[in-house]
Length: 325
Image: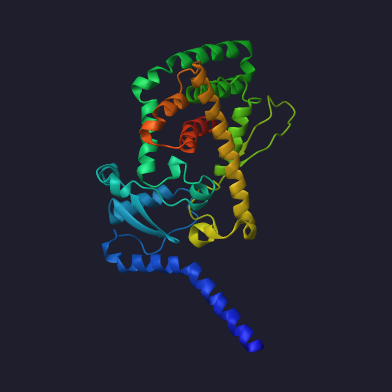
């Protein structure tokens, strides 16, 4: 009886191990069988480099402009010249311009809705078309009054309280991007609810450590502090990146997955509330020219869902606001 239980347990453990390791073994076999077709490169890699681009330059001089590296489980190509980048990423963009799979940040946290983490696909092409349409030169000229207004406000603030220049510049940059995206101004980055919620959303993606320290002599509490390493947006950082089958584990058996899905719901709530506000203004005929209004007008033509355009609007909004912190 005991022997049967031990045998059964060993079989189950072996099957689980095969399920987890088979994709990795399949990838390694594929790379091994096509090794002769890969670009030249070193058999070993250096680790702990503070300036890896210097090593990449050495590799380019030794092996040529296109170098192959095996970075752990991830096959990597290093391009050592602008010409090589142009030949592969521009002339053959349909083949080589896709992105690595972001299981944690792109699929679980974002539901495949973030264009910056999406592979080359019909969705990504629609996402790019909307961004280009909303920020091309002709459309960008309609945002010039916003920039002029905020510039005047910035000059006034700098004259009134020059010691708070950092806060004034942050407010200016945040107000420009939020007005351009959603048609609403930012009066104060420290108290604006939308800016704060966006900082939290980007923190879930890039490991922003949120603190509100009180230091004597400080001009204002800091909304966030960037840590040295990104978070959900690094492919390969989490076990689910190496073993994609873990993505399908039920949430009640994987607390880490349940937490990520809760964070995704917070992001969805933020982006949909902002788009719904613009949609109401469009219905009332009082919506100013902004990127979100452009998305609503183009939504039917591109066949995108409400959630897709909400995340699309969140791209320049999230990146622009977070960059000024």
